[in-house]
Image (cartoon, rainbow, N blue to C red; front, side):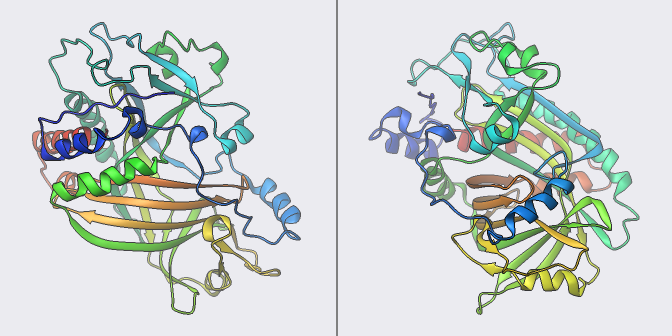
Amino acid sequence: MFYKIKYHPSRHKQQQFLTLRLQTLPVNLMAYIPPHMRRSEDVRKASPFPETLQPQFQRILNLRASTSHQNIVYARHAISKWFAVGLDDDGQFPPNIHLEPTSLEHVERDRGEKPLILVNSYVTEEDCKPERNCSKSPWEIIAENVHQELVSSFEILRKEMDGQGSEKVKPTLVARLGKIHFRGSPSVGLESVNKTQVEEASLRKLRRSLYTDIPSSYVEIIRDGVVPVLGVDFEGEKDVYLVKLSDNTRPDATIACKCSVMENKKLVLYKVELNPVRQMVIDVSCLDKNLDLRVALCTKKILTTPTDDEMSDLINSAVLDSDMKGGLRWPLGASSGGRYSVIGTWHTVTKIYKSSSFRLNVRDADRFDFKSASGEAAREIVLKLKRIVSEIQEPGAESDSISSMLEDSLRLIWDKFLL
């Protein structure tokens, strides 16, 4: 399987650097590689709970399981949208674009199907120069679609941000890179979708998710080729353990406990948040690129009330273990006392770069979800568009100014990150 790469060496020094690097490599080496075709560098990891407790623990989880094992929460007025960039002049998918199944073990186990991804059959740079008469650039098209929904979402959010008491609401606008996966929905099954002649109307009826695990070769290009020419400052590296808890006094919420590691290899809790709430999610299939784009507005509620003894005891009893999924385990007999239950663990190591307009996170993540008893390791690229969020929160913020910032940010992402 091959995926197309498109570079423009005349635009910027960064593209020149990438072109020089790629001249010594096969063109398909840097293309997006579906997860089922990658060689795993991770050894098989065990469950964080002792084997003697797993059957009993799994029965408890089955009773408490929610409709989404990832604890994804959408706001009541959330906006969710998908569209494709790179269609032909008639607004149709070009003949070189088709759908192909990709294999993910935990998805197949949970849902019994292989999701579909859009694949470009062109394999060389010369092949992938379609003749189009579009008067707008791809980032302009994306910016127009995002701007209207972003302003609408913030108007609703602004009314809800006051009167939160001890829970401070923090909005974040992020751009995530990955590959959009299409899954069957109650109205349309994957078996009925035409995979060779792709129709936009059919894809809109499917469920979708963004798979954010990026090939390590791509991460190296971003780290070694893109970052040095962006003029960003290296802020540092964060090594964080995230313990996700259910709280029987908040049945609809998930508590995220962020922890660092002390010298004695014990966790120390430094921040407690409620799980992010998605206010806006816009997914963009980028047909002329190797990766797709998600622009999302999320909010987090930061809990400022002191943690109780029960939560602290649960965090303190965790044992660091790199052989375990999520990086943590609990000793035999460890108990939370009844109010809290561990439902997930994350171990993330993030290199952070910042500029005046955005923050770039290059992250290695090891996650384990207790409800589905599945884990995954991922390398991820996340851009936090902090300047736009600051501007849109200012009283009397002008729509044209926000639109201009959004367009500039999306052009940067399109040119330098969506290879």
